[in-house]
Image (cartoon, rainbow, N blue to C red; front, side, top):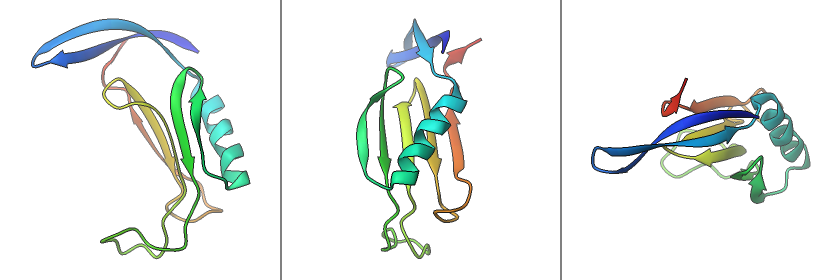
Length: 106
């Protein structure tokens, strides 16, 4: 885990800088892949952050051209630090990743 500083917007243009711990993404990916291998819905806390996994479903999402609802995993808090994986190309394909770390200060 890396200790970093995050800029958190509290209201309007006001913000504060707080220290947070960011998990190693390789460890997060391994955890998510283990959940994906089981294919069972899960939510809880891991690496100090709220996280959840939703397995693939055969029905498509509303208003989508997709033929199924892909499995997904997410961890973190939007606007602070957030990471997600979505198996949108299919269960046995590599997931698409999204990382929101724009408020993390170097």
